[in-house]
Image (cartoon, rainbow, N blue to C red; front, top):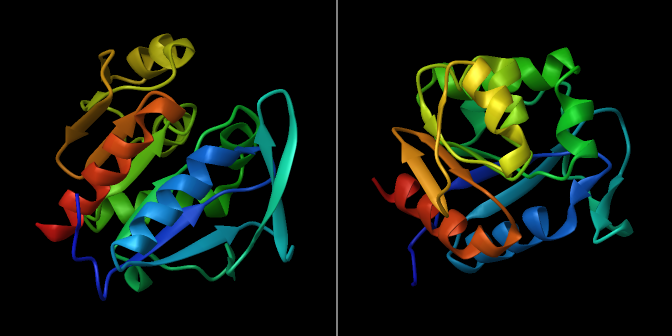
Length: 180
């Protein structure tokens, strides 16, 4: 499905250990539909390293440091999974503050696989319908979310998906949210 995302600016928040496909493929799709997509990461690294299958994957260029990143500069936020990536980010106060700022501004926040751990930490999961990698079901329920096993769940501006196989539906839901 073709989307007209020209003029839309999307931030992807990630650090070392992101699931390779869950960052690169949504980025590729959203850019192919006209969006400007920037990778934001903590620290001053020029690259972050992905996780692919059972080992380290490829490096991805960091476009902007997390320090100083503002929700006002973007139209949506994407949170890729991987176990390592969201586990590191959920203890980073700047990362949580940025996620909260997107939520407070009513901008789309999209999390896939283990990315919804960041929705727990930021408080955005409470009272919302979500999905995730199945092992997060209890965490999300304990945070006050209603978990369901679905390819993509959209609850207002909150968009969640389960796994890499859901990426086409995930990216499509992000694009639709931006078109509204």
